[in-house]
Image (tube, rainbow, N blue to C red; front, side):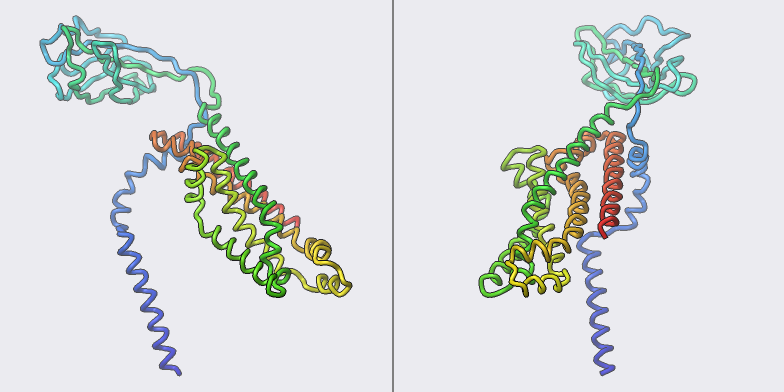
Length: 377
């Protein structure tokens, strides 16, 4: 007996180790690369923890200088000032793809700088962004782009905008966008949870063995409802959201419908298990008096399960707020859709604002769910 137990434990241990080895291989795990690339995520982490929350009016000042590409294709700048706001390139002209240093002097201090090419046909092309120091100075390496070559003796110009914040702080436009999208997300979750509750609550009694599983017909109904709940629960919310999106086009309503289907299955299972765990005493007493099944449920079951039902409903509203965030990534509307747009446009600070809004709302929903459960138990 002792030997067989040792062998069995050894086999189980070997299987567990083999499972981890397979997991390591199929996921192509490389923890060394994770550690080596940690600095690459610094910009994202800083952006996420410093969300775009406030803004100020910006005063813009523009200066420019002609820069022939290639050399000799147009007259050089006649003179470069030696004082006051000015741009000073390290060379007066350059051939295409040649790199040179552009310096700015006596500009607005501690201000964002936008440097762009103004082409001969008046089109503009942003080259890069940087910031001035406390003395209004910046230096940056610029490449003479082939698109900026001289046309008909007219040289492209290097333009610099200094963006200086002025006035008082106020909520940024990102905050308004995020609040509007978060509002949509919360009520997407509320609508889907409400519809799912109205459908799942009566169906859950059909999936409760102590209520339905009596006789051939009752047993068949019980297994049928269990089968339906299990099938619907097998579908991932993202898959369901894509299905409704192609059916109804993209937007909040398809997202809410996807959440509704998934929530019906989840709440139906939870509700039916709550019904199965009731105290059978009141039910048996009512049945002994000859009460109908409807009255038995009304007076013997509902008073026991309503606290659990309300707790599950509020908890699932909390869950649906989080799930609707992910559904937004496939066009389901709400804060997830907005977050997806920010990430695709590399607007990391705005994405940080959306993430913090999600965190705050999820925390508030979790607190509300806990308080409701506390008061009902």
